[in-house]
Length: 361
Image (cartoon, rainbow, N blue to C red):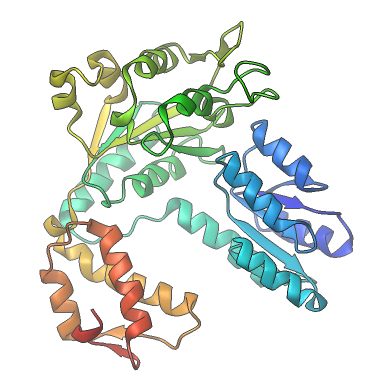
């Protein structure tokens, strides 16, 4: 886990650094927000930012959003910083931890981030076969295409593969090709040089370089336009990229995983996706079945989400009644795991007592 600590390294933050390193984290330090943003923009990845609560956290989070850098922020400070802590949470910080740091709390945060990056919960034999194949190919350098309906857990599976690969201690970088406008996606993927276009005030490292040594997840690859598909094909084949406005190709050492909720073979027939790119990406296909085809997973996932959201909301232990669980297993779940999670989050909040009945579902 890559942790970046942002703020002056006084005694208490230094202690937090030591505790994090003892817990297995790789720790980097940025003296202030501007240095942190510049470091992240320049390609230094982080799985978590631990930030002095007295820093301008709203500006940091706004900067991360503007740069489309997706990394959770945890604020830290003393008990006298209560007002600043509230402002940090309102601005978008995920958590607030008090200083001096508690070893168990630091360890719990690191473990939570690690779990988020590596866990894949399943019980059904249908999913077990997919996971077995994932385990077989995780240690290879082969490109993997993960397919399945929206909400089936394609990104979670990609993280599962990365965590079991020889690149597990290197960055896992994800980019959603459908969420970024076409005119910006090229720069996001390949980076740009200063002056490459209006607003390019400095060199920007793209996701390919940010993922150096690790894994790059190209989420919803089917939404990429034909021109970028051609540029991506070269990167996949030769492991060379061209920054926008760059004069020389840049070598990259990465493993590529792509996802799609569309039938890419059909997209090839329709002329919207390159066949040669599909061959390069689809060395191994992990096809995730929809939740309705793996009923054995519904109970396990439901219990997990109930426990997760009861803890997250500071509630006493919750459990599902037999009737509620039967309704969950029988439901079609067109939104798959994402819909199930949302339903159970709401059910935890709406339940009147320790048992969640059908009415709360």
